[in-house]
Amino acid sequence: MKPSRVIILSVAVVAAGLAGLLAMQLGGPQQVVEQAEAIIQKEPTVNVLVSSVNLPVGSRLSADSLRWAPWPQGSINDNFVTEAKRPDAVTELTGSVVRLPLFEGEPLRPEKVVDSSTRIMSALLPAGMRAVATEISVATGAGGFVLPNDRVDVIMVRKGDGGSFLTENVLNNVRVLAIDQQIKEGEDGKSAVVGATATLELTAEQAKIMIVAQQMADRLTLSLRSVADAQDSDATSANYLLSGGSGRPAIQVIKSGSIVREGQGGSSQ
Image (cartoon, rainbow, N blue to C red; front, side):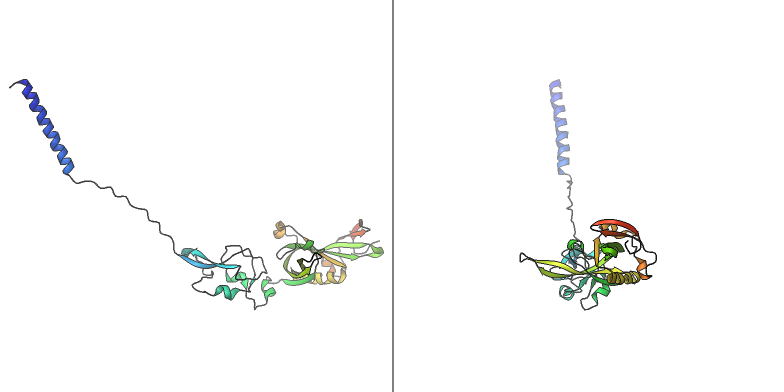
């Protein structure tokens, strides 16, 4: 057999083998790649009653200050007010008084509000404390900027001998419970809200001191303190007012607008 024929026959055999192998691969089972779709399931929500605005202590709830908001079901607290349990809660709570500060979006809880039919002020007072009111004006109330929950010093001004004036702090770092407000007509015909009475949170002893100071003073002024002083331990008071004058603190004597003497006692020379 000629060499050329041997070569042609060999090529034909190899080509036939490759064709058979290719046919076997094409005819075999095909692998299918499946792509799984990621499915995100949202947690069920429950409508919870929340505050629509920031509400300070002493403010009253209204339909505008409350709203229903979706809340994750797994994060529901038993103290939350839900629409499923109390569908008429907005109407029922209208007029209630805020006992503790509420912030916008915060769920309403029963312990933070007081029903309007209860004794409101007594509900705001912590155990063992007293509420004592004192008259104020723009001049004696830090220009009208004293608000509920602020901290103030109570400064007493009274006349001494010879026309001088005595000033002293009778109470320090006491909390303002409420400010009684009234509408005052201005000279330009516009109305302004002016506090007429401030109600202070005092201990039993401080309440007595305040009452004595109101009798002695020509004027009582509230000196507004920084919010950073809320945790300050400075809560001293003029206890000598309850003992008839012993142990009096240093008093400034003011005459013709100038401090002329600082010393103990309540009379000027």
